[in-house]
Image (cartoon, rainbow, N blue to C red):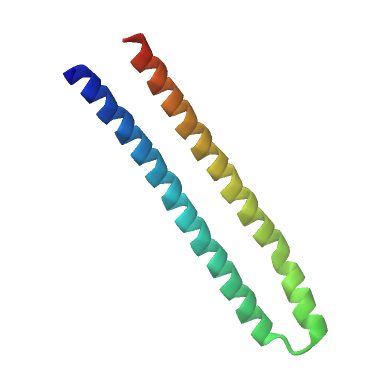
Length: 96
């Protein structure tokens, strides 16, 4: 009984740890997006014409796209690690 309880606690720790790590990444990702929006607003306020506004905003697109790609790459890695960690733990629990 005690061994089963310890396995359950280890499993719960891994689940909570993985979820917390993913939540921290998402919070950081949202912070990055908010900073990007603020940067766009700062740039927009400085524009003296519609053409300048459009050019400046288009210039920011690659940076925005790169941020989305990086966030997605990290997110996939976290989820893949989380799932493999849990399935590995379940397999080890089943073997014992």
